[in-house]
Amino acid sequence: MITTTTPSIEGRRITTYHGIVVGEAILGANVFRDLFASITDIVGGRSGAYEEELGKARKTALDEMEDRAAAMGASAVVGVDLDYEVINNMLMVSASGTAVSLE
Image 1 (cartoon, rainbow, N blue to C red):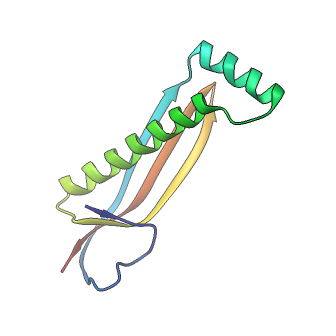
Image 2: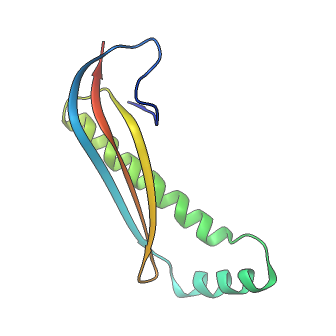
């Protein structure tokens, strides 16, 4: 499955538009990671725990979006957009795009 933020794929013609597909992931950060992140924020530096959780959430959202596109018969997702939100100490990542079939 080709997944891209661009509206088209160079050298490939889109033959069918299947519609919008979305994938979401909501992951809670555990108490120890929150504590470690707070300490890191106080002394400066990067929070590896949050970066790891963010990576997992992004992968989950993209995988879910691609699975939904494949279920529609698509071979690619174009115009992909990633959104990040924090809701009640939980991390939410949503991925959306247009499922298409390529020539």
